[in-house]
Image (cartoon, rainbow, N blue to C red; front, side, top):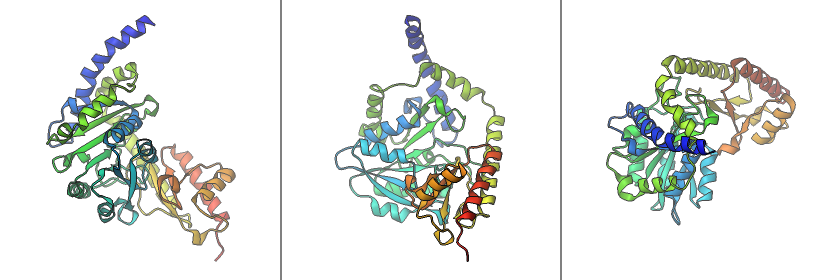
Amino acid sequence: MLLLMLLQLLLTPLTSIVTLPLLAYLMQRDLPYQLSPDNVFLTVGGTQAIDIILHVLARPGANILLPRPGYPLYDAHAACCLLEVRYFDLSPERGWEVDLHSLEALADENTVAMVIINPSNPCGNVCTLQHLKKVAETARKLGICVISDEVYAHVAFGSNPFVPMGVFASIVPVITIGSLSKRWLVPGWRIGWIATMDPHEIFQKTGIKTNIISYLEITSDPPTFMQAAIPQILERTNDDFHFKNLNMMREAANIFYDVCKEIPCLTCPHKPEGAMAAMVKINFSKVKDIVDDLDFCVKLAKEESVILLPGVTVGLKNWLRISLAVDPSDLEEGLSRMKAFSLRYAKMS
């Protein structure tokens, strides 16, 4: 036990000295300004990062703007710190872009931030540079900061390259959430980070950065032996590893999209081009004896042993979230069972 304690004491400062500058360096390669290691903070996965940021921003009467569909943990953590949640829409017809009119209509003097998830879980889209700039300009107009969830950063395999929201931090202050789990495929390691991207030092002047540091001082840290591995992982992972993973995700997206077009009751409005999921809409005019998305998923699980996430859980009723993070042969089998299930419940014309 004593040896373990001594090892932790030795590793903690070493990992901070090595890891944070390396993370800052890797992120700033995509930015038009220098990102200081003092603006990067390790967390126990992306989940703790969400918890810390929402608690730091919360105050009596405050509200936060979340995307719909979105990631349910934001709702859960907002409820825990008494932040009112207001939902702006993502438009499936425009590749799941933020509906900026919907966004503007929701904000008031008590709005503290908006959240954007890019690449998107659950939608599978990757925002363009032009659209992100419009989002930044809208947030500046509203006087709020942007929380940019980039746990799927660089997991982009379509026509749109990944662009970090921090590129526009000179327009609006950005808090970025990152994670090791998705791009490096180590979800159980619970290694995440917060980066304050703010060339004008608004977070410093308003005390937000100080409060993030204070919150981190009273919470758990990632295990030190995991921290010690981060520099080696970041420095030694070659481009072939990422290239191979992107090819696998691209193959999965192609398989999914092609088969989905063969299932009459399902519509995918936008081919997945990032992250590891997609959203499809149920056309109830073409199915019988199914009342909603939850009923669809329950029956599918019982009859075909295929598990999907009902869209209502991510804020979009009568849609389905489908994970692409499976072996291609398993994905084909699952889609084949979904097709057979849909044909059994098809309305006869």
